[in-house]
Length: 192
Image 1 (cartoon, rainbow, N blue to C red):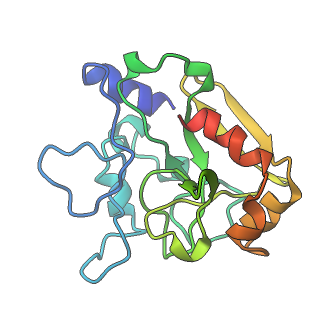
Image 2: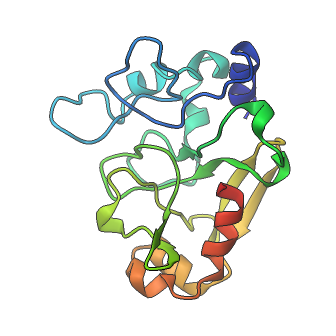
């Protein structure tokens, strides 16, 4: 969170990009540079991907800050960054999530965090098999996940609907977990 904040302070309140493109364009401000799992991408899930991100120097080049100690995956990092605007444009910092425990069904976590989609007149979870550019929720912390907010506080969210935990653990489909799920509405409030 401090790296995210100090980057914005050094860049006229502009936040780093939550995108994770691997073919780092000149002048880009991606927080990490993993990119999608595709031919030619030899940087994904490597220390180089993290080091080429703009937050690296603000973390004192500490790779361990990018990974949750309870993450049992082979991913180099466990966190994803949510979309935002400019630091000064965040009207309710205590209600705007910044970093979140994330997962992926691909070879590494790619892209910004937004695990829900609008479909058929309502919000639902992104299916695991349709997640190349979407980050998934986790339940690795006793049926919940950790989130940090723009005012620097952190919260542990226990998922209220048992289907959410089952979905996070890939035990049921997005379709089975989405209908009338209060966790989707709650998450939508902090992602806006």
